[in-house]
Length: 290
Length: 290
Image (cartoon, rainbow over all chains, first blue to last red):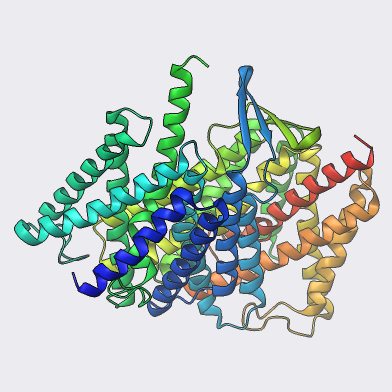
């Protein structure tokens, strides 16, 4: 851990925490959009280094569209009535489904009308589809989670669980790490580090008992799910970088590499956390007999 | 046009027409699912020939999930009430969004836990994402269109408009075709053929004045949109095949090549047609002052 890395974290973390807990909604929406765009463009750069040049502008525009669709989705009022009736107020005009369908049509146009060599069209379309579906789409659920009941605190829960896990993995792995976990993917990762990662996440999750209206076991299960999804995201990003033959996804954040390096754990943790919280809310609703 | 090709069409077309117009819903759902699975597996084979081996089983399972989500989507009753309130009855439990999110999580697991060489994970994830998002997802809208008001006839409209266009392109291109359209992508396509394609589609669309409750201009606009989307789909599939270095996507249908060869025009025409019909239905609703 370089001093540079700690300083960057010391500046960024308070900004993120303040924005999530007390910022107006649109600031959080704008942050999610900005981070998604940076991550998608770094992913497209990695894919290009691996030989698959995506349709960058259209993919970025659609990534922005996905974030906007999530923004609209969190503004819908939903009321479940008896007999399988669902009442929606202010149902969104721009939906995730609509953005994805527009993306597909746009890729078809770009592929058929563009001036690329024919053999590059399939890899280009595939890289674009991967950037949108495997990076922007899952990450955008962070905004959806933010709009759930107690959403800002749940978003903070996800962030703290992941940050604590990263720190735990580093401290434990460095001091007693011996058994390599995925030597091909990430030579420095050890099983001891992964266990430290999980343990620190569980502790961090338990601390939220003070701020979230959920029983301890729900918080521990949530922290475990977020942690596992986070570790998978981290491993997968290592694979992307190896395909591209680079060490960092970018040089945006001093000491941390690129944005994709910094949020790789969040990409898959975000949809998992949203699903889990939505399920908790429904289960809670039922147990109160409503 | 070989005799084999004509015979295959003579067998398949009546089956499809009868199933769409008079078959029970589930037969159409099963046909769409079957065709989607065949098309996705052919696309994955093309991508593999181009050097990108996707996660085939998981992608096929999720393609089936998308078709099932569309099947559920067409069973929802929607009522728009004043004041931006939307009432849904039997809202689906398995949604397009849910299937796509599950796909993403599954690809993360497969990528991180699988035993592939690291450099193959990014291309494999990208090929899978492309197969699901650029083939199965748009094609599945054919089932959604089937569930729209007058859906079976609109599905037939799309099929006939495309079949007529193919025939028109062939006859005109062969007799007077001179100006090559996209020599790199598809050496035999000419601008004269493309014009014949469009003209035949417009005539076919106009014929549906007899079976669809829509003014002539709406049918002509619909036929033109379907035709353009179809021609783009056709061109794009040529690009996929060129990347893979093959002439046909498969050998499933005698004289027609593979399933992807046969439905390439439908892939993008399906979502375009569904959007257009959904828009017509809403516009019609408003113009009656409801």
